[in-house]
Length: 301
Image 1: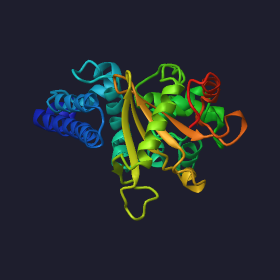
Image 2: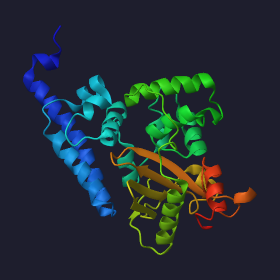
Image 3: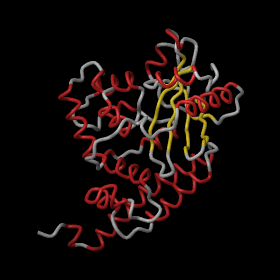
């Protein structure tokens, strides 16, 4: 039987226009916020070009995402892997975590609850234990062993979450750890140093976080910077655990993007114990940090 949208071309066209315009509007807002916050014009223009293309697309972008996945989306002009992943997230959850982050409105607990089998309490435990706030970062953690270490999550639940995320994000491939093709720790520590120096001098734009900010103040510095082919966004952690431990001006969350704007993230902290005591380290990559400091590739920060 023919679907109502197929039977009524006018309704179908209206549906396509509304959904495509909604996706395009989110991408345009990302571009505008990146521009205001001083991001590289290349990143800004990439989002604007994608938004313009999708706004004029005769096909329903949601249908492309649901039936063809990332492979179909990247066939659209000006849509690379990273923006394809953004569209997949919008279709799966109705939200776009990168946009919420740039607005200061990101609520990772709510985002993770969009994954079947993840309730409110578990969503908060995941966020506080792993310091991640995107579905892609959650998927990586589900494959590299970190998610299984969160209290209350066993191997069977991790397997179920992996399957749910693969369906939601349009992928069935097995992921490699995010560090495999990511920036070297020396580069990440350099970005961390730039962020903390410029933040201390009041040289960075401020965003207004929604969480833990009853006064509604613009108080969270944000840095957009570049090293070679990598684009970075850095912010102080605004997690419940960072507030509880008084680390809101120590823990720095760094999001890094390749040339296709595909996102990963890490957290840089001051280590207080062991051979790295007093030094800045990238969580999960302590061994690489130890080697870098031993070789005097990076200074104590």
